[in-house]
Amino acid sequence: MCGIVGYTGNHSAVTPVIEGLRRLEYRGYDSAGIAIPTQPGQPLFIKKRSGKLKKLEEALGKTPTTSSGIGHTRWATHGGPTDTNAHPHLDNEGNLALIHNGIIENYEQLRAELEKRGHKFKSETDTESVVHLLSEARKENNGDLAAAMRQVCRQLKGSFTLLAIHSDKPTHIVGARRNSPLVVGLGTNENFLASDVAAFISHTKKALELGQDQVVEITPNSVVITNLDGTEVQGKEYEISWDASAAERGGFSHFMLKEIYEQPKAISDTLIGRLSDLDLKIKFKKINKIVIIACGTAYNAGLVGKYAIEKCGGIPVDVELASEYRYREPSLDEKTLVIPISQSGETMDTLMALRYAKSKGAKILSVCNTNGSTIARESDSVLYTHAGPEIAVASTKAFATQLVAMYLIGLEIGRKLNTLTKREIDVICEELNQLPAKVEQILETVEPLRETTRKFKSAESILFLGRHVGYPTALEGALKLKELAYMHAEGFAGGELKHGPIALIDKGTPVIAIMPSQDSLLAEKMSSNIQEVKARGAIVIVISEHEFSGADYLIRIPKVTQLMQPVLAVVPLQVIAYEMAVVRGNDVDQPRNLAKSVTVE
Ligand code: M6R
Image 1 (cartoon, helix red, strand yellow):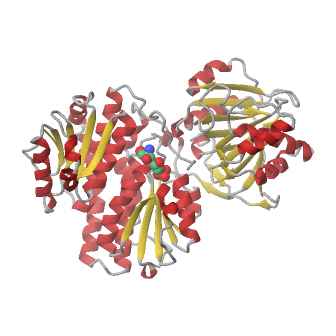
Image 2 (image 1 turned 30 degrees about the vertical axis):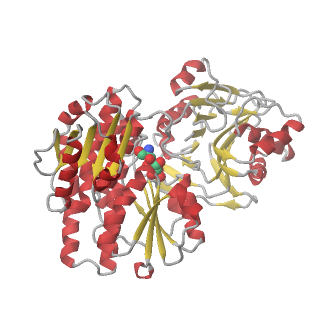
Image 3 (image 1 turned 120 degrees about the horizontal axis):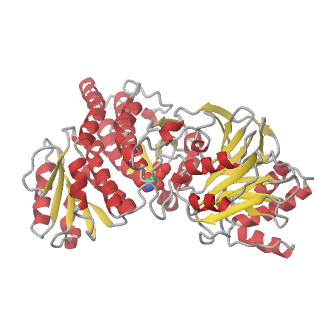
């Protein structure tokens, strides 16, 4: 979704603002803009362009050297991605600029009222209503922009991160947040506001969390946070645990490829110190049902979590699409443990499902990759995955660590409820410890797979088959291919094939089958499924830990217990999707229409 950056300090603001926007590019966007004060009381310097940041930079020309400014990358919701709809938006004097992430639900009513009072609108956005409202409120509050922002936020419905700057007080930047991320970066004689710490990580590793419905005013040497009623509050300060190089490509052609190769480290970082005790603040003895809520890739990790937690902990687990959950009024109470899984910790669908569950008394244990994110802060307990920053829109290393988190939770419940024997616990721990080396082994031998992938670049559709935990792995493989290659792809449970999907198989249809571990009974069943599709003309690529003569192409992965196979089997699937995007000339790191952090419902 939109990227937001504000800088006030002692350097010309253009560089840190543009650099910050570049570091937020991964969030997905379709236009960009910047506002810099010129002279106190004079109209601001504004430049906005639809398209990529490069187009904005080319259009910048001579910029003011003022040491404060705000910048925005927009992911269009209200009004198409045009120069006019791009942010910042201005008041009618041109002295007040505003940028926004989220959706203002009552913007139409506000706009009608503002137009009646003489405000002239230029764009189709919901945001523009807010800047006119803020302009009025600022006058009513004798030029106090923070007070004006509090007044405006009290009138807004929806979700938002807002940042505003006025030419009268050019060193002051005012921000606000509701259900949308905003963090403060604390520098020396300079401060930042951004939707993500990545925007200022090369300047400072000190950050400050903002709570829900809070307004912040920064100058180069001060940060003042208030609730909407004006009472001052302290933000929670924390140290960012990764450095700028983690958010750079480091010699790889794309972030996605780098992140695929970072999986062994991400898995081992997520395991470190977690195998003997997770120290979760949850009383598992009081829990009789677990519900995992998540979206996209995180949902697929949750599906694997169901197998792991039920097998190890014996508690029934449901896995729900977060976007559907609260609307069907599910039955849940204080004996229900809800596990939201989210890389960003900001996904609105997941957050809303979490809040619904909380309101019904359920306990919340979230699995998040982003320190201090909204989902993490609103949970009773958090199990952080340590994947590091994931920049590519398509999730890879975050998925691997979410799977590990599922096994860790299963292990923890098994240990606390004595549903696992000491021997079983030892075996699981040993298997988990071996995962990083086994993923490494796959990555060392993945090159021929890239060549094989290129043979299918013109396929109309690719189908994925799996059984047991191989089924969610197949779903993840298909999701990756859709996102990156823009090809039709679908994942099926092998046993379901004969109930309908087999009609899709035609001569030459590529089918990617994930063979269950040899020691599981399901290997034979999958073998039959492969024969069934081959008999109808499919070309079959088999991912297997053992030799399999029925494959047109065989991709070998190391042997591992069936439950943990997704961590290994997904790696070739990620590589296939990656290579397919490259060979089809697609934007690998920022696939069309997608955003990294989906902060609208
Ligand atoms: O940040 P989250 O894990 O909550 O994001 C959930 C989905 O939006 C995300 O996994 C999405 O499906 C990815 N683009 C998948 O590659």
